[in-house]
Length: 387
Length: 130
Image (cartoon, rainbow over all chains, first blue to last red):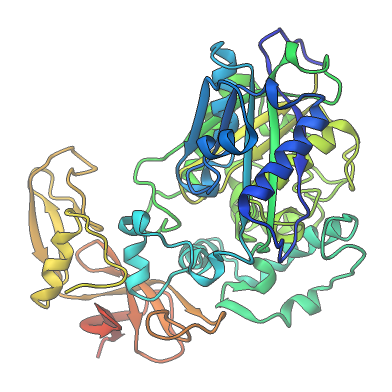
């Protein structure tokens, strides 16, 4: 248990829609459904909200939601750039607003039809406003995040004496978790390395189909509240620290232009802030939600966390290091490879479930956890703590 | 020449003006001589805003490579079943393009570029150095 004061920001509740391949709903309906559920979970109602924060790319901007929901006066509203990289940035915004006394209850949310609507896997993610970043790979014919990222992943694997042969361990670990998760399409399904090697290439010779996160429709909302507005810690999770980071010479999924590109330099910028703010290290974490848009992200994340170096990352995962009884359980819901892909937000729901003891694969003792946004571009992260 | 995937970035013009002249252009800092690509206004090494524009000889070694397979999207504009490479040019910059030297690209393979069209865009097409 950790001491909290009145203004300590906490995750007071969560709500989410079904994660499906065809929601049949407008994106605003997904947002409203998720927000309504989150408020109910937190024991609050619409009149409690005085802040909203989401992604810049989310179509549900704060003014629109305020009108749709009939919200009262808002004193904080923001939309953060760089998509899933900034997954934790709305939470950081809410935390800072609350700590500064600007707002009391901020809803952070992400709701999109990422499968039945614009699909990143079909190149629908290349918008005209981001063309200055995407034009280099796009003009040579790479238009999806998987195609762009794979160029960098292949070099990363090569430098570590690894190949796609070694990525199956990450996928199998996520499927072991997904097998126990009723929200996953892989619930109660076995999966073998043999099946993995029979999967088709999405980007040869780096990413097979299961090395890429799922694409689906859905909405998730979290209620970020000052502690004294929450139900006295009941089901609430403390936000010990939050950070965003952009390395020198950062890019969007094109970390091959300079040599000093660590595994995830942007994540390094975030982690140094999180450790410095809390006095914790990776060894203190009871579990981690690492944003897994692609399986190589888990290996790179382990390196950036200092838990394994170079090709050791393969053995760390292959020997059960990220399983429920491993040294650091990672993505116990199956992650975005195995549960759903709501741009990092469904992983936050899993984190809250872990702290409440209601997860499908429950970590035994939960005091501290790390949640990250999408690495490989300007990124974000937070450390959650039991209260 | 307009293109579906070309931004209006004035900085990137350093490179695109070169394509029109059949050159692979890159920046060389006038104060510290470091080279850079993609183009930037300020040198990352020394902070100078003064640079020369040079044309690469187009020779280098494969730094990374991939072959997009799925989904099966129209080629062009997507490089479906094409070998896309990042090549480290001898001048010290890295550049993305496609590889026309066969289906067995290798890290470190020596290659040289000609500028050819892929859809609307002129890009470096690399072949094995003879």
